[in-house]
Length: 202
Image 1 (tube, one colour):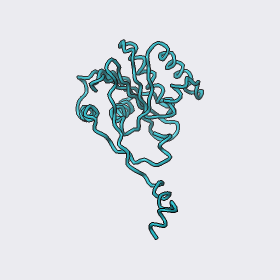
Image 2 (cartoon, rainbow, N blue to C red):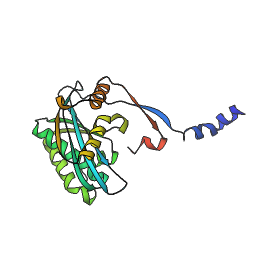
Image 3 (spheres, rainbow, N blue to C red):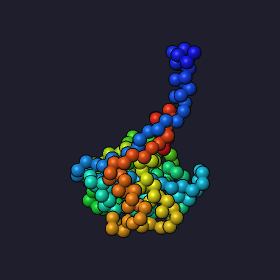
Image 4 (cartoon, rainbow, N blue to C red):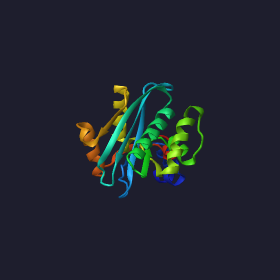
């Protein structure tokens, strides 16, 4: 009976709908590059108050600097793009010309890569992002939220404190230093994935 079900694909089809574990690891950039991880935190669904962040690290996984900011009432896409734009602006001011930008929103990543105008509420910010891509060597990629824990910690900090702050590496303490160390050691986090999430989502 069991052998018959397997042969017909009945059990296979059922098990494909169940969540399965996937290892998610933050990756270091190449030597000479800086990696900028950004994130946004939005409280409540839809239009609500949000904060965004960026964290830069070198090829050893050491933090150069990080920032968090508070944007007030906005959409989740606005939060994501404002964080990327501010991160690139600070990278430019820091003379970082080769920047790997990693976000946990596939929609944001695709709009940055395709140089699309995007929805009306983010067009101005996207235009600024595209301006930096014309002046710098920038690579965009997506990472699942489980691999973006350092930026996620900053995002919640920005929402709670409700102001802009730029932090140097020696100003980071406690939990955030532990999360940075985990990334440097290439330790994976586990994400329970559904089949549909392989192509989209956060």
